[in-house]
Amino acid sequence: MKALDRFPMIALAAMMLLAACDPSVFEPEPERTQNIVATGLILSADFLELNVGVSDTLAVTATIEWKEGTTDSQTVTVLSVDVSEASVLVWSSSDPAIATVDERGIVTAVATGSTTVTVSTGDGTTAASCVVKINPRAVITYRAEIIQQNTNTLIMENLYIRAEVTEGVEEIFFQWYINTVNSYEGAIPASRIYRETSNKTTMCRLYSVERGGSYNPNPTPPKPRDHFTFCEITAPGGAIPVRTEIYACQYYIIL
Image (cartoon, rainbow, N blue to C red; front, side, top):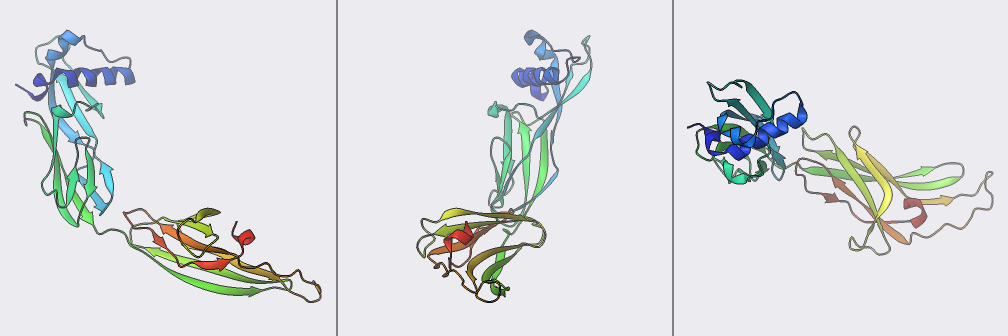
């Protein structure tokens, strides 16, 4: 007896899904699903590479066909068959200490190394496998630099944050926060949000004061640094978010 002989519900669901996508496909009546058998299971990838702390989903392709000798002999392939009936498929990892997999095919990286994830029908007659390689968690590093900038009318103090992340991870996200006290707790997001894919640098002006001179002989008194700011840096690849130091700033400049 072949795999889906024991699971007509899956076979019927697969054929109904196919028919919904392509009206020209014949949709069998429920009493005829016993004529459908499984010829194989295929995973969406035979090799998967993840960083520690990252999850990804393996989709299942079920190949089904009519039994030989029926008048409707044909072979069809149905992608992403609904496997909400979790009892009909069995997922396993050869080394759960490296990566785990749940009943929906979600693979979660636990530690560096390699393992094999396998999905099979309940009776074990049809199966598919994927080799999973787990790399170390992505790591974010940064350096901060304060640069003073003088123009004919202004004296400014700019804070530059230059970040790096583990090779292979391209995107870095910067989110600035502002607070009324020198603390991370209670800070609210500022409007300065950056998503960098190239120079991986963000800048925030901490302070600005009008200067005297021919352009402005009577400057306005400088506003106080009565607020505090910091930047949170995030990246994919399971990287742990990093916060910069806290810097005194002028409220109206940060927002």
